[in-house]
Image (cartoon, rainbow over all chains, first blue to last red):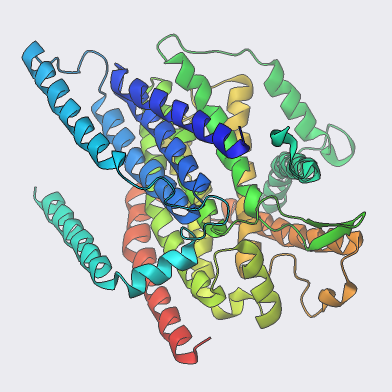
Amino acid sequence: MSITQILFWTLSIVALFSALMMITSKNPVYSVLWLIVTFFCISGHYILLNAQFLAIVNIIVYAGAIMVLFLFVIMLMNLGKDTEPQKSKWLKLASAVSGGCLLLVLIAVLRKTETHMADLTSGEIGLIQNLGKVLFNQYVVPFEISSILFLSAMVGAVVIGKKE
Amino acid sequence: MYLLQFDWFIVLEKFILIAAIVTIALVVAMYSTYAERKIAAFLQDRRGPNRAGPFGLLQPMADGLKLFMKEEIIPLASSKFLFILGPMLAMITATMTSAVIPWGTTIEIAGRQVPLQIADINIGILYVFGVVSLGVYGIMIGGWASNNKFSLIAAIRGASQMISYELAMGLALIAVLMISGSLRLSVIVQEQIQHGWNIIYQPLGFLIFFICALAECNRTPFDLPEAENELNFGYHQEYSSMKLGFYLFAEYINMFISSVIMATLFFGGYDIPFVNEGAWGNAWWVGVVGFGVLMLKAVLFIFLFMWIRWTIPRFRYDQLMNLGWKKLLPLALANMLLTAVVVLLLNR
């Protein structure tokens, strides 16, 4: 096994384990912390693909900002083990079935993809320079549209927040 | 043995570098506590610590020993694991930032080119930003795990303050990136050596960055998470012994690292002003001189931090938020736009 493979397997196992722990933890604060571990593992995978920009943005945005807000809300509302609502048995079954369906679709999609999408050793697709060039030349319209989407979401949040 | 087929010297080299830099950061942080008390004493017309050793120079050792010897108390109502994790995270995130800072030029040791930088990654400055944004967790987890209302309020204050000031900080950084055209910290320094320091082009950006750095380090006038007259002692109220020491220590390491980053981004890093040190070749002493210059700049910033702490009183919380969101953020945005227009017009 090469070092890349060892890293890949370690990261994958830790990512899966922490994702499972995130779902099964009774305390929501622990769930958030496990989710952060998962994000770090995913960032590790990005780095293995030499997508450094994606890796660090994943950490800045998800682990550094969104999860902090999650923690914020959980701490402020003082959610604990006992405040977690227990769903009925049928609802749990239904959610398991629908989750399984999603898994099926994902597997069906991924089964036929090309295996060597990114060159691991010299791939420079993910470096920030190439990413920027692609985003601002080839995909400039979708990029701008998504920024407008973000802006409208921001304005919406401010409007809702202002309403007393 | 496929595993062993890479340059083991680079592992050794990086390992030594990491050990050296972490040690230096710790020693500087240790003596920052001494310097802080001496400067406070100077500004308040007192003598400051002068009992342990000549001029009280052994005071940090005495303090450290005291912290180690104290009884360690973990509150019964706390979540134990997180209570211990909190100070650990604070320390880890404080030291992690030093990995991408260029501490000196590339030097030559026994025929090997050794850059005085642990990792010259493509996304250097974003890495710094990422680690800074993770710095919140130490405070939040510690404050929440203590299961104390004051700690929790302080933790939430600290977190919201850090998130708010990160925005203006990021925008000030973008202006710097536009001028240097790279996210690599080594390239940013090289660019400054060639074209003059960034402080000349970005005085407003530096001011915004400096204010945000004060807020990110929880230093006065922004030390709301530790406002002792409202919150007893802040987020580390339940902590004792070396766990408390870790929190206090992490603050000083943060201060040191952010001083170094400001020196690197705006004041030319290891560059000696008005001297063309590129002509000196890359013997080992050139690296040492560069490192010394960087440390000198950092120490000046640390002094500035302390000077501000003992001069300016603490902000009120609403004033803090007003300053962050309604003044610094628009200013930073305007600065960014102006820089973008000028860079575009001059086509640099």
